[in-house]
Length: 417
Ligand code: UD1
Image (cartoon, rainbow, N blue to C red; front, side):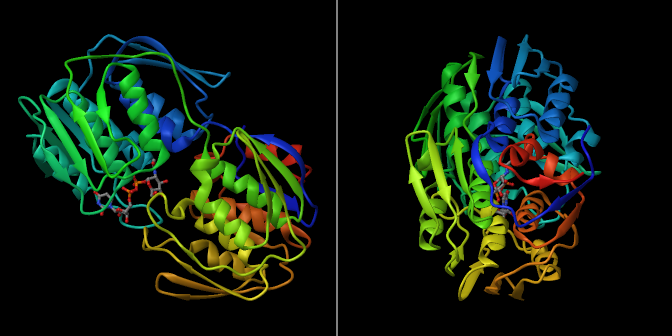
């Protein structure tokens, strides 16, 4: 059963080896792409997360069969008959549900998807997704909270994204994979999850070049036939576990790591004085006696990921000196700061800047999670704080961390209840 609160006793260095799960942000678009990939096949290394279960329910409601198996596999049966309308309660439960828009449009020429609405970390508009679909020939109407997308056929075009949005790049890439002719996505996002989605589509017969660069070229094909495929490791979970080692002055080895995917984090952790031993598929983290202050600015990949900003801030609350953290991707992503301050952190917020003056100690407190990564940050702070910390709102954590309690306990964390 997934609990809503966690009580932990901090101050104990974590030790041992832990394995990463598959990436949430790769698994979600890959599952959406199963709407386009026909046949019977399996996705492997799919993390057991509430967001993944929401997407699986979405696929079943759209007319294909998707089954989650406890060994992290999802079995898919797609006979090519996809429904047009995405259910309101699933799209509003998770913004990433909007990934189904591109595939439904490409498969059927008509998609009706509820607007996902805002979320805690910012307003998160979808204009770049719509601009891309329009360029491919779709008409878009927004009425009564639904987006309706229609196209007799999709035809490839040149699409320049004003910002390298991860979701827009993925949605447009999926739609373009079945469009007629060639599509160029310029100023495309370069995140490893985009590469993974592209490789999955290629394994099913799509023609895509330039993955991982800022220009992606897609030559449309008529049908895609799904093949078995394994999801990449979750670089954000890896980073979170690395910080768990560093913040508790422990010695933690994380297995199932692609070092290139976490290069920006490696650089900043080294700069902060954390000892790292990097191998082909694993990384060992030894926390120093005192972390050094570093400045962070979140940026699209290969810059420092916004999804690691909160966890890094927990680490920097203990730094010697002053660190400045600048958030450039989402406008409201410092909610963890207020809770960290209740634990004794010294943080000043000034619009999209957080100025942290390091302290030597945090004290355990009751804290509330407001979003997924803020949740991870507070658990990390609790692991390093003196005394007991009670974290409320864990449902946010289960959206993105597969069996995190067990993983931390395996490393010796004292999670009391
Ligand atoms: C994805 C990730 C999320 C991560 C984020 C940035 C998934 C499921 N989620 O979210 O964990 O934090 O990338 O790395 O993969 N924007 C627009 N118009 C649009 C789309 C986006 O203005 O049409 C803006 C957003 O408001 C935000 C910025 O672009 O300020 C980045 O958003 P985007 O890269 O699209 O993030 P997501 O795909 O939503």
